[in-house]
Length: 219
Image (cartoon, rainbow, N blue to C red):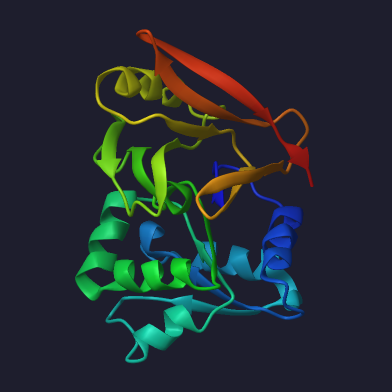
C-alpha cells in the first residue's frame, strides 16, 4: 500500500496489519530514506504497538548477515519517508531491490509512506535531488507514476502536472495520510486517516492534465 505521506494514524497501521491476516504478524520497518533516523523508528513502534513483532532493517555500519531471511521472512514491510534516490541506491548495492521483488511475488504485504510509497511504482515525483521536484525511476512493481504530499506541499501538484505533460507516465496522487491499496497491480481501495482526504487518478488527455478524484474510506 502506497501512502501519501505527511500524516499517519494508528488506524492506518491497524489496516495494514489486517491485510496480513495474521494474529501477530512479523513487521519489518526499513528507514533507509531517513538515514535510519532513530526517532522515526520509535514512532513506528508507537504506531504499531504490541499487536505485531516489529524489527528494523538497517545498513549502517553494514547490513545483517541474514539479509535474505530478514526481508523474506516477514508478513508486512513498511518503508519510511525521506530521500528516495539515496534509499534506492543503497538497496541496489546490497540487492534488497531483488529481495523485495521476491517478497512482492510472494505473500508479503509491501507498504510505505512518501518515499516508501513512491518506490513501488515505475516512476515518481521526488525532491531527492533538491528543492526542485523531479522525475525518478523506481522499482516498477506497480505500473505508472505516483505523487505523494498532494495537498500538503505547495509545489507537488503543479510540478506533477508539468512532468506528466512532458515525460512522466500517468498514475496516482495521494493527499497526506491517504493510502492506496493495490492487489495484483490493480487499485483495490483507498483509505484515509481524515475525512475529506482523497487520492486521484491523473493522466494527460488531448494535452490537458485530468484528475479523477477517488474518495477515500476514513478508517
